[in-house]
Each structure stands twice: as C-alpha cells, then as structure tokens.
Image 1 (cartoon, helix red, strand yellow):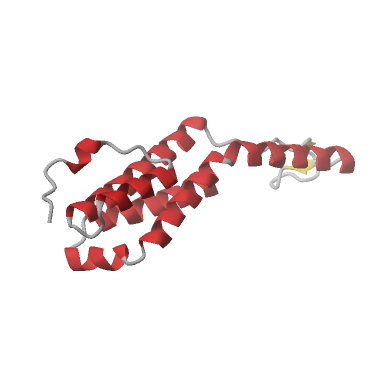
Image 2 (tube, rainbow, N blue to C red):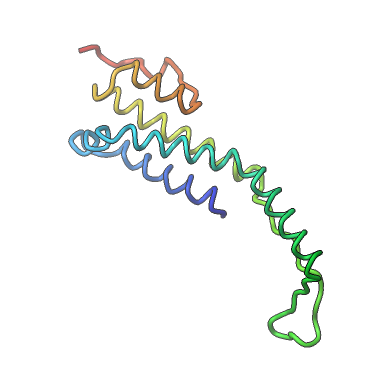
Length: 147
C-alpha cells in the first residue's frame, strides 16, 4: 500500500459505509456533500498524479545518491555489506487502477443512494458525477419515484 492507495481506500470505505446508513444518518452526510465530493476529486487527483510524482521521487533520489556517493549498509552487518541504495519501489499500476475504480464506484453508489432517498435531485447527482469524472449510468435511476 502507498499513501495514494491508502487515502483512496479510506475514502472508499467511508463512502461505502454511508450507503448502508439509516436515512437520518445519511441526511447528515448529504449536508456535507460538497466536502465529500471535494474529497473524492482530491483522491482521484492523488491517484492520477502518482506516476509523475514517482518519477520525480526516483529522479531526486538518484541525483542525491550520485552527488553524495551514498552507500547503503545492511543493519545486521554494517561493516562488511555495502552497496548502492536500491531505487524506490513503484506501486503497481493495477493497484492504482483498482483504487480508482473502487473510489469512483463508492462515490457513485453514495450519490445514487442520496438520490433514491430524495435527498438530492438528479441534476445534483449528474453534476457531482461529471465534476468528478465518474461515469453515470441512467439505469441507476430506474425505479426512483418522483416526488
């Protein structure tokens, strides 16, 4: 896990929990919908920006190692084992992709539940999805009674 996938998972879990709440509890989170959708957008930006940040991280470490002739020692045998530090390990693309899919799906389910409970209208749901780059399926609205 990495910071990027950790914060996406934390937010995914939170939004997934909201979908299971009683209506009165859900209403409290709808009152903060702007905050939660800003968190979703931030989480997606963190995931989407990982590749660029990793390249900068790797380049910065390599530059420091070259300029300072950095050597790494094994902690259990510091006098005899030394070598060039290993490069940083990249989070697998599939982990980032899965975190993104999970976060988008959790946000969409939260918005759909809010709409089904008549706490947000369709325009708010569609705008929130569009603003966050979340795919919206009109079938999600099937069976929602108009008030």
